[in-house]
Length: 423
Image (cartoon, rainbow, N blue to C red; front, side, top):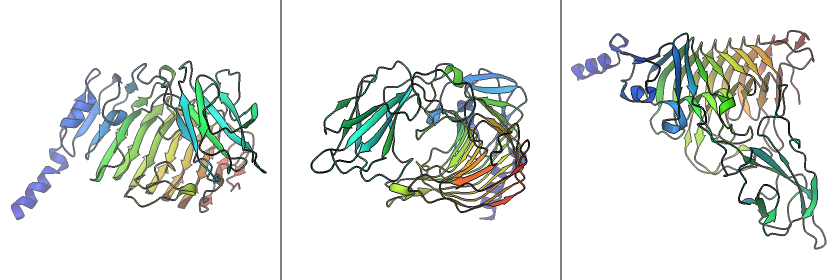
């Protein structure tokens, strides 16, 4: 028994760990698959341009490893790796105030350009009359919030110029080959809203966990002075409202003790995303039916750089996966984004957002849906003279709001506005 214990200790002895070098042109997934627990994978300087391998990532990690991006190393998604798809995604859980959630999508989308349809119930039937709906289409999937140069469109997001259309219960034509059908002609409440997105599929730079792995993945460190570039200008991006979006780093499911340190992340929907996973039925307002929860915990994002001129920053927790995320530290990062820079979100329990420097065309730190046990301190918002708060705390209709975090010394540099809670 003692000899067996000594053998196990030797197998995990850092002094025996190998350093595996990745030259530009090498396949990093093959090297990672052959690596032993505790090894270090080193991306050497140069352009490492790759398509997607396991679990839609350029590099998928499922064991204790160190991944170093040396200065001058760029892990970049290949051109044209994600293309416009005809398969739509309905986003319905942004708003939990619906009496009926019975919208279906059909037809044959024309694949001309990415777009988002907005469907609103604008009239409730009475005395035998049917409900009515309004619709419009936004010819882009870029987030319209935030200050960045947007592609010109003939329509605006959320606008519904086609109004008071009676619900027939049959397929009803919208535009671009798209049709919709409601399961019932009556019983909807006015103001109910759905979004239908036609976009590109998700892609990840380095992914740790696929969400439902039974064994916990532990002790992964991603560090260095190199860059992960998701090449957003040469790939069709997922829409900002859909469940799965691009990120440079994704931590998903039963994962513990991950450090993301020092690297630069750019040209993506998000830089780092962390969340658990739940297999139960998703109920309105964030609840779940019976199922298994795959939780993530003990994640550090420290001293990184996010340069994301069309996207967002760090997402901590996710309402469309609903597993728990615990003990996350987001410290001393430099973040430049078009929209929200740091977003503590659903089912996040115990977190620190401290000492970050943020330049954001949207919100700086947005606590969005229920989280708890947070400390947000010593963050600096730069290049903003609008007077907006550094921290916003709220939730969509029908969702439980976050527990108020501890707020201390968060400053808007140009406006000298202290962090504030906004209802």
